Length: 195
Image (tube, rainbow, N blue to C red; front, side, top):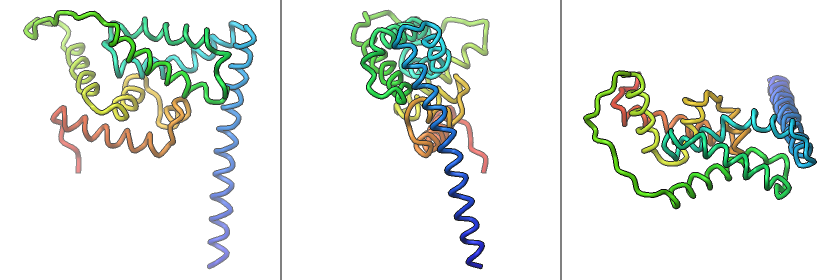
């Protein structure tokens, strides 16, 4: 009986070491990209962009109207490019980009000029777009933590581990945020949960 306990403990430790080694390898690859980009290598920054653009897009989309998102994403990466030398820990580039994205979205609203809302009774030929806008509006009405993780999962198609790795959140907090966020979103949209 005790032999089984030690077997499972060794097996769990081995699995944990494998996951840690994979995460370390990924982190060092990102750190190497940061170092190369800091040295002026354009291709390295292009790779960082490809790697983190979906995360930044999702974070901005969770906070800003869809028409403004692309410009803000470009501004986030422009600011990152200009301030890459200020990044203290190259392994934390994902969390750093997430912070820049959140700050740019907040700044957007500080500088935004008042606009006039369109009337609700405008007809739309495309029912799917209307439905998508309604769902996006429902997601945006959720608390920040749920809103961001749901956008990254549902719109950007990122997995839970990818969200955790890129944003610097723990796997458990991403899992909880997704679970609770989906529960709130279903309630807000009037969708009954399956028992």
